[in-house]
Length: 254
Image 1 (tube, rainbow, N blue to C red):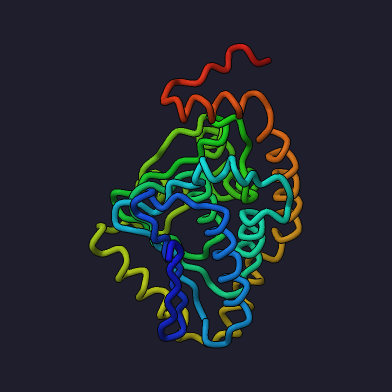
Image 2 (cartoon, rainbow, N blue to C red):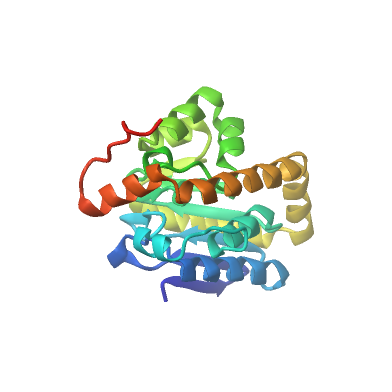
């Protein structure tokens, strides 16, 4: 299974399990993720959710070949279903990130409640480099979490940054070694699962209450722009250059 689901002691672990493709996410995988989160919300046996990948890779983001074959050109696309579900889950979400977390691999973390990173983690949101715009309401949430200037640097330039910087920005709660990461995150998820479920849900709801409408509106605006930009010449040049293994040339576009 490319998305591996495991339930144990109140914790649903959702693991990216496509290491040979750097855990790149296909439309089918996004649908699995969306369905898993939707089911978890109504499953009384699930009291906390844990996202993880592999020791050397969290996720390389979208599988670009599949992405172009199955473009997310409507709000019902699997990727947007997943983003809607993760932004509306009432149960606590923990993430354990090691290795690269590219694009949505970073933006999904903005919807998690506790994020732990290994010291080999590398984050990036290269949307502008692909001729696209941010998603997952990251254009709203990242400035809120990290401050405008830091968010602008990461979203406008799209350059990678390490776990120490992610921690300084407030994206990550704690940085651990690769060996310590998953056991620690599992322990934190187990602590959440052992607490009164209603207290945890209400506390999360109260903390996020003032941002729900703004997040929904921002996500909708991003989707509208994203769908248009996906078919624009800049994105075509970016994707063509990627597959041809060359540097894209955006100088001819206004």
